[in-house]
Image (cartoon, rainbow, N blue to C red):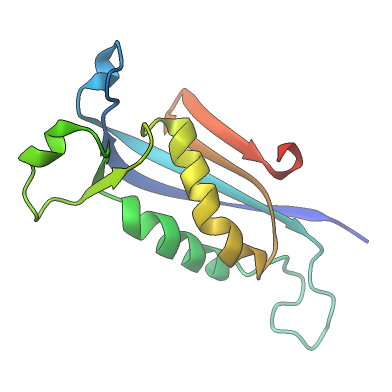
Length: 145
């Protein structure tokens, strides 16, 4: 039986700030994020299936990630709940307050928790990588968890 990994890449823009951080990331700033979602499985073998040869239809993967991640985070400002700067923003701002420090690592864990359940109905999650910049990323692998 042939096992195949498929990956789809997503992009979104998001701002954040790190409360109490001792560097530039303490200031509100933004990144062009790149999210790589990899699934693992065997391609469909049923010749009568419209999904013949697919581990998962890429459009099905895209629908889950758009609903659970992109539609929520794209062009949002993510701040820790205790960040007092949130009080200065108006109701019209796309502000998301989270109970954690919005680092690349914590954002990745949040994303994993949001996509695991809906994707588990479709295929097996293999890895998720969140690139915060062109040279910085956080990675999650199912085999480690």
